[in-house]
Image 1: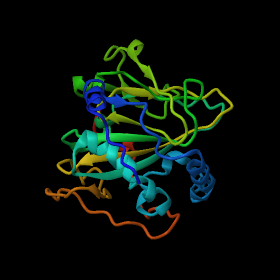
Image 2: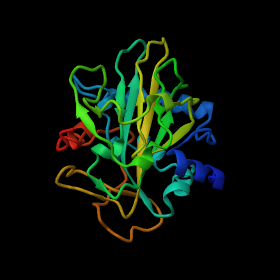
Image 3: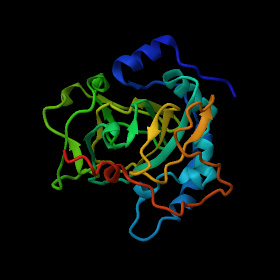
Image 4: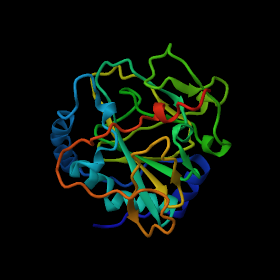
Amino acid sequence: MASIELSEEQKQFYRKNGYLLGLARIYSTEEMKRINAELPQLLALLEPGETAKDIREWHETSTYLYEMVMNPKIHDLVEGIIGPNFYCWASSFFIKEPFTRETVGWHQDAYYWPMAPHHTVTVWLAFDDVDDENGGMKVVPGSHLHGLLQHKRSTETDSVLSLQLETGTFSEADAVQFKLKAGEVSLHDDRCVHSSPANPSPRRRAGLTFRYSGTEVKNDLSVNPNFKAYLCRGVDEFHLNPEGHPPTQRFGRPSFKAVSIEEAGVGRQG
């Protein structure tokens, strides 16, 4: 499998702006057809009242997801940002069915996560073509350079997140619209301000995220006790987190319910 190393120009762009688009395709059209054809078998494991948002950390029990987490092409991209030693600790689905009102409010991932230092890259894998019509993500360039901004709680919102950035803490007018073809990925920094609108279109918008952190990043087990680190490349010279073990079945759900980002951020009053 040919490597897809980032150029120095791409690395500099990421450091300045906190995200990357226009990357080499990870999965071909035929490969994405096969991946999408298997997705219903994973969704069938959801219990009554659950949605795709509840598929968090199922890479720990499903080789279907674990194989994507461990894709060498994705690791090539991550290594270009984080360096040679990193692990994956989270995966989650974000599926917006056609004609849905749900949004994802403006936020920074790192605000929710009980992890330090901030050295995490999110890889967003498009299962469908994604654009401004079907609820594609937007990012504010350079917002990761300003540290963690103030968030506040609100129940009067269509957002799946009640803990969102306060108005005036960033400039929404500067946001960049993400557009991806199925099988492509984007990268963004854990402090980058981002959101996504509703999906009023007749097209589904499905994406799968993977979170990769440098081995020097430690999770607070008192907040997220089921945390597992899956070493992807290099060596874990710090041994700060419990080690995960590869799954053996094609589809399976964890025996525990993973901590959501809302639950992880419960200690932040905003």
